[in-house]
Length: 171
View 1 (cartoon, rainbow, N blue to C red):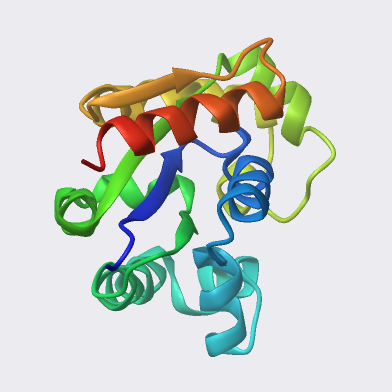
View 2 (tube, helix red, strand yellow):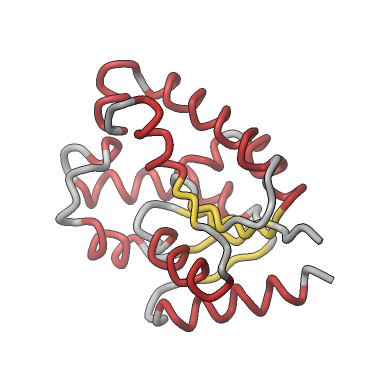
């Protein structure tokens, strides 16, 4: 029997990669980091894709990757923070997997990403950009059925909750 995917969605800095690694280790399913896969295929960083080709080109690469990954099974998929900008991405993932949105406050996100220079959408005043982007995307994240607020939770506790959700939604 094919296993459904576990798809982690959420704003940057909410813990998708960290939780994805834990879920992969605990379930034995491979972790697929969408951003890393896009970078490998494009032969350049996401920063470079944004700078040289623009955000619309990146969103197209992202959409193509969603189509490919949602056709497979038995994976833990860590998505990019902007995956929710196209509702078809979430719909495709929901067909073959459990989509869980990780949430965090802007304060928590800033603490987690303040020393990270690999995020093209945060160039300039990080705090201001986080607040603006989060406010714009909040309704898109809130529209996802399964949500976990990661503020103050240990990654192991978050992973355990997701595994419980996976088992209770996989019957």
